[in-house]
Length: 141
Image (cartoon, rainbow, N blue to C red; front, side, top):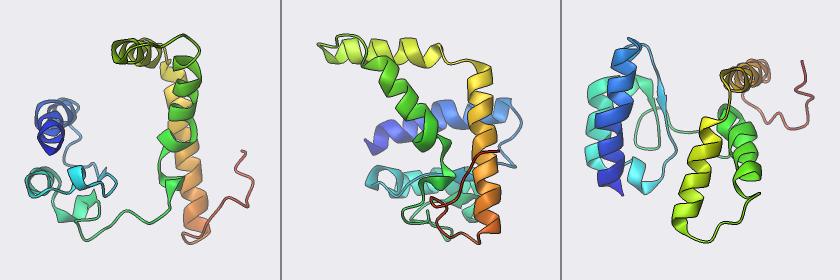
């Protein structure tokens, strides 16, 4: 798995960020899954992001425990995508992959923009709450 993740970083993620000319300003955040903290992965991340711009278990800035508040995928994307994907009858792994690809591509730019705006809103609230849990608060704007 680390080999596949390394390949993804080297051949897709980093080139896309270079193409968008944002590699030097992005902070890369990932969880502490064993695949994500292997030595070869750490080396790639340090090369492109430095220690200061990686949030991960193997770096000085670790992923805060139990903090899905930082990730819009946890609050919208995966739930929304699962509802769509599992509407149909999935028999094989190929069916699942095809369904994920189909529905993932159907998500509009406006939907993604809204998810990011909501994530920024959540981060502002987290900042105001000094990093405390915010589930008790209304997050509506």
